[in-house]
Amino acid sequence: MPKVPEAVRPPAAPRPPWADVGHWRRMREMVAVTSACWIFTGAVSDDGYGRFWVPSRGGSNRDGVVRPSRWMWQAHHGPIPGGLVVRHRCDRSLCVRPACLLLGEPADNVRDALSRDRLTNMKRTGKADRRGARAAALALRSAVLEAVHSGTSSADALADVVTRVQAAGDPYANQPELFTNTGPTTSVTPVQERLF
Ligand SMILES: [Zn+2]
Image 1 (tube, rainbow, N blue to C red):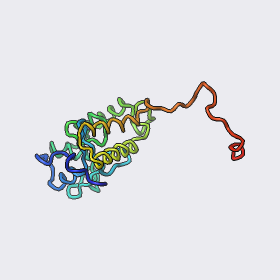
Image 2 (image 1 turned 60 degrees about the vertical axis):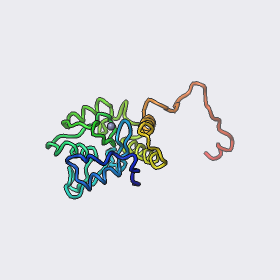
Image 3 (image 1 turned 90 degrees about the vertical axis):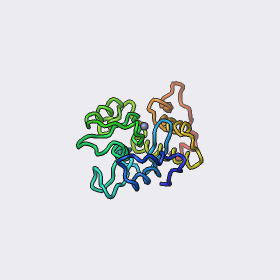
Image 4 (image 1 turned 135 degrees about the vertical axis):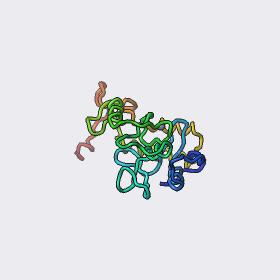
């Protein structure tokens, strides 16, 4: 992934008290600050969360890959007590803005998912992004990267990009008409009939 321009990264200082110098530098290179959320633009996992490699300290996984949101919470507040999870107030899985993150029980995350109708291992209903979690996250990442690399540095403009990309996955918006009461809108020409 191309690095995020310095102008839109989180402030370099003060460094979060629990952040390793090198990890903080690498994290900042991948985060675009908007007036709403901070969007992680590094690797994305199948569940739509980011992947941040922390080789020296490891993480919840043996290969040292942690969720960027989890890393960011820990960087600000210290080690996460066993069994607890980092939740998003904003419901944006790529967000690492400290103010958007809060600690909770795994059951809280399930409740969040249920209340937002997006539990992925159950039937997807209602408000779940119609692109799926990973595709939605990839769309957000590429839109943010495209904006910052084409010179957008206003935090408000970047927040608009985030809102627009999110709206594109809204299951209630911009749905194509599946049925129409006005009869067929296309007619099959003799040429097409021969192809069938
Ligand atoms: Zn956020």
